[in-house]
Image (tube, rainbow, N blue to C red; front, side, top):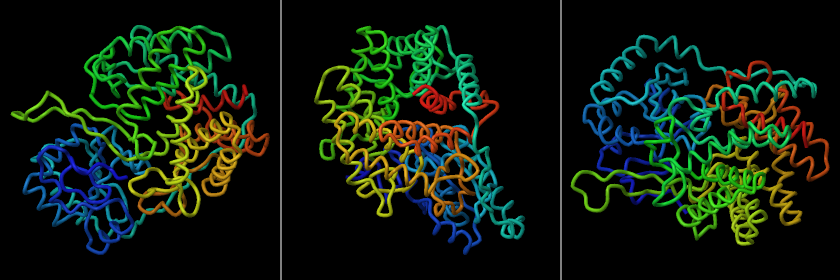
Length: 506
């Protein structure tokens, strides 16, 4: 099992390039590693980080244009250490350096200090920027070398009362409903994105309060998505985003994480409303996942499908598709949990079998030797210990235990909980996103609201399944790390809101 290379030209390891003709592989790219930064220090060169997405058309254009320009190639190879990172493979890097989207080009000193960051640039502008950054770095080299990054561990409150947590839940609910589009559905005013966790949060508010506005907003969102261009009427399932508020002019990529989250949404709405259209939507998503992203060899799901327009003069239809064949733990765990729910709600045992096959593959092939889940599988498990993978895998394990009664799933969930408590706990409140030993050039560990929401939900679910109050204390530790103004988090507070509901309303 490996990431697809046959349609991505010359590649090495985790490096992937546009499937169209390009010379980007002529640049001496490095993966993100301590060794790359050590080389930059030894050679006194600034670092270029190219942060991309598998399906990002402007990332592909940079390969085909700017990174295929002979002068750009020469400048980068002579004066920079160039790093190439896919956001899906390294979400920890993405969390620190992403500049409002992909591609992001971040320039750093050899010890990791950020010098500049931009998004897409054509070749001429990139050449000018490379020269400016290099000259600026030379002028500040001594200063930057003396000021190595010192990790700044985040501090936060340790414990909040149940009343304070309930107040936070109300704030998140109000801030998200203020973002709701009551005409077209969704939660964005311009470009529309799939937000499954926002839908799930609002469904939880409906279950707790019986206030129809929450259920109605989710139903409207799903209905408008299904009726609009975001739904692929020809091949099934949903594109990642649409350019316009009415879900028109979609960007043609489909991600496992979003499809699995939408599947969970459709199942939840069908359970609450018993409206047949939501059952059909769920079945359509399952049909797409089984037919397009399921890997028969492993029983797990690939990461995404991208649609690319053929180059002028090429034979075939207007588009061809490529698959990201990496197996991502978090997204597969979300899919497995949704399939387990579908098996019960839709009375189809094959969905349960599919979910358990996914879980068994992840447990057998995606665990690190020193414990904890790795982030993805590419012939071997890679990037160990990210909080998001431990939390979502833990939730799926609890679901698998409830579906089967098999103690091994509960035991594995407990092991992941212990891993989080020992390896990722921030003594000031919450849990860190990465392991302590993975902080080189990353500038320290972060305590992020979305990831702590997922961790708290896992601890709540595990506490109930294992009948162990100690895990509930872990949830409270995560929930106590954030307070105050939740409006600034926007829709990103939804996973935290889900956790608050799970904690306060078991």
